[in-house]
Length: 429
Ligand code: ATP
Ligand code: MG
Image 1 (cartoon, rainbow, N blue to C red):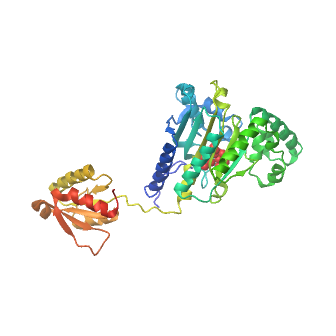
Image 2: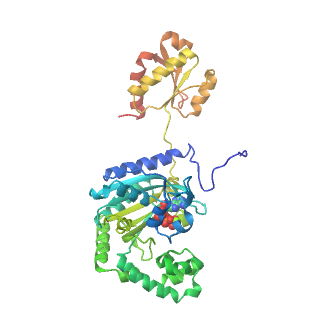
């Protein structure tokens, strides 16, 4: 490829027209399903004050320690491009007083930014769809959220995916567990990698998340959180499992699944596929009953999750989408014919919804226009040349059926004819 003067920033991708149909399919599918469960969309800015992310995500997490795009704006205020959606969503809900208005089922979609090492499935700008539910204590809503996910995977044709769940209990549970972990890992201090040593004091639960192979035997023998669960948390978790069972949703309990953030309580989960190697988690979330209070708000139970769209699109990739995007290409060989074609195309759009029409622009003779018609993927060319203009007709040529003869009808009859044709090809009702 020719060398160009500018290239996109590393880890930030262009999504080209050949790929956007799959993205649109994913987004439309998710939107329909979320709507069918009563979720409403919320939109909030890409930029927030840096402190918001430090306070919500936590100072000692990977995101805040090393992944945020943080800079001073022209007023010297520290701002950060959102690395995830929960912080901005909670901020917006608090700012507009919506958390005092009962149950809220919300979703958002958009770009997130993390300065990670780019690789397949891991980018510096990536897209998430996230959902957050406020003022419900679960485990009923926890279970329904997972059922919703399963419906989405099925609709997208994603089969190789499984659910892992765990419970992190309440903050007292974690304090006791944390103490047990610190004393356990201390005994192996010499064998810990540098990150884990650092986390021993700041965030020992995160050590369980270590991806380093040499650490696995130590991690596997570590104390298990379940043994420290208080009664209320144990009941919440047991009921969640009962609900999932009754909904016929398969899952495994992964006692080492910790999402490491201080605000998580009770349910945490990940949806994982075997098809994307190390970037196999396509969706992750959990309950965060303590967060709103931590930010100075009322005590509001909440649960949320986010899915990575690049990873989902990759999974959908196997099933090629051959949807026709253009149905009709209008060929017009003079200025007068072009004006007529434009008007006819407008009438078709008025009267036959769902028809996608390109009206040829840029002039040229029949031959070059038909070439472009063919390349557009259109099923049909409608033709307006001098003859058709003088007779008040329009020519019809089937572009994907070499045997079909070219025909012609009166311009006044075009819309009726197009409605019939749409029925024949199954485009409308
Ligand atoms: P990972 O362990 O893969 O770094 P994470 O725990 O940092 O994931 P979350 O913050 O829970 O991820 O984000 C939810 C989902 O968003 C992930 O499961 C993944 O599908 C997607 N995601 C996260 N970071 C990236 C990234 N840098 N590029 C692409 N997708 C991402
Ligand atoms: Mg990460």
